[in-house]
Image (cartoon, rainbow, N blue to C red; front, side, top):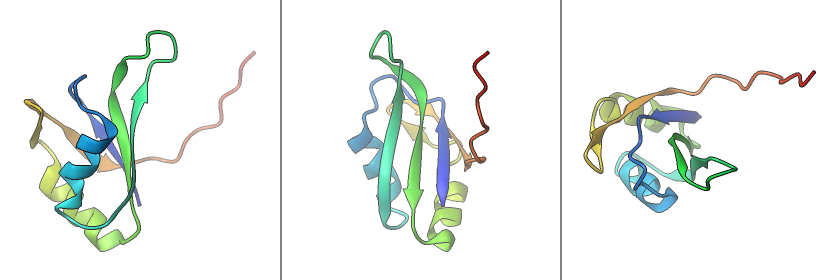
Length: 86
């Protein structure tokens, strides 16, 4: 399951995001989305967990919890929409 994590502190890197979720199960990957122009975090990221039950538990446990001093918003990621560049 792919999990959306919003309101991340700009200090959080992928290792920090992974560590925060590993307490709730096996994390396949953790990604902090970076701005392509500035190289800074955009303040959100994604965590992938292979076990859906662990992922649901992680969502419930981590929503509104602090990571690096900021309460994060956590929910199941919605499928990515097709982009049309006209």
